[in-house]
Image (tube, rainbow, N blue to C red; front, side, top):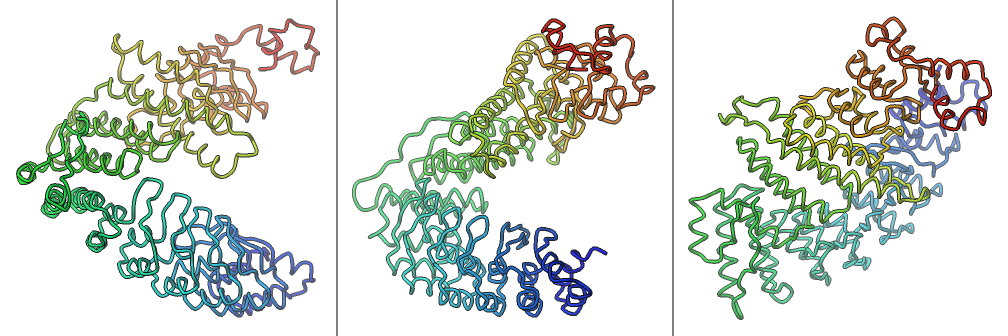
Length: 631
């Protein structure tokens, strides 16, 4: 019987009688200690009992079984897994005040943290458990300990709209203008969440209108999220909000009406108010700065007079472009909302069958992301993935009607090539970044970036597969070959040390919903071999691309043939001593390829040397040593 699972399940379900039976049924002290310390699904029995609010179980585990009250575990809250959560954190986050008191009375550390540096106090502030907040503070909890993002207890209480906790923390003189890692304050948090009552309270206690790392004030943050009541309140505070910022806020709120609320009339009213403030407000007029004309925005320029705004009602499409131009001017290209709404507008065009407009906008957003963001940013990866899905969809549906009755046009190969080159750039920069990091810095952030790197590489291979499978015109062949050569030259090693040729031979790399190109991809493999990819290179498991082709099930004969003609060896072994033939079984291998045609006396000799362990190093020429090692 699996006593560990039985004990865990009893603690999870609050079944104290069952727990007592299994923990003290002919078991010694050491075995009991082992069972209460064991983790199931990442959590100990005490952690899961505290998470689920089973007081009697928690008390029994602590007092009778001497469970470690500081031993952390993994628990789930609202679909998110919290790693390294101590029992006290679990009880505080779930609102079980009686268990919180039990743990503290037995010596639990009130300032212990999860892996993200979240304290039990911060967990209680998140969900508004005021009684627990007060109890923890009375027992020494530090209200200023921030999590790894620099978010304090006051910030999270403001963001979640827990005004009673905010009042309590302010009565304790919580640092009201403290900034997070990204520069936002508690005032930013309540402006984003829409809590006007808390915002007023913070201002009464001396909160200032600081800017975050994107240059955003709380007023602009409220405008971006569409909280009209916050914007209207703040723009009246002329002693703390300057005129230019009032204008920007009204204009930005108008762009939010267009793209988020689809409220064109509301947007026009806000833009007119901004125009009045700009030209007829206190002081000298403040004309709009001139911005460059952008092809993706259909070369529109910002309207600078009231008549021009009235005319917009007759042209909703230009109004949407006005919103994009305005947002980019106010937020700047580095702000994530700028590229997000460009991509959103492109997606709307694609849904309407206007694929060229979509491609132009998405390219503009991708260029913006690659110039402003660090490489391997999730937003850049998302943009590249969207392109891959769009091109795959268009190729699969070419000539068919869209939902709006438009025909899906053929894809321009130059557009795929354009994106492919940008994907290669992302892969190259990402590879350099990952290789520069010393081994001691390879933490969770490194692993996250590595995962994105693998995804971007696979997306890049999909784009390459589309190009090599569907386009073979002479004028494009050289440019496609050159780009694939550049990709191979990077020398990528992804998961398990696999090269791009390895990935091209795998069946499990497909990521798009519209798979017009199957993997293993014969055309891509042929192009990679022509670009100099090594078919004998091994991954960490000793598998060559030919081994992975054999594992594709069924093994495509053209893939095997291309690899063998490109220099792969039939008898090259992996770490398990398996060859292409042994993976397929010899008879099946003969059905796929002409085994005799791709076997040589040179290979047979190398096999004999390895099989009978004949000394060969420093006996045969150096060039042959590596050849023998392959077998």
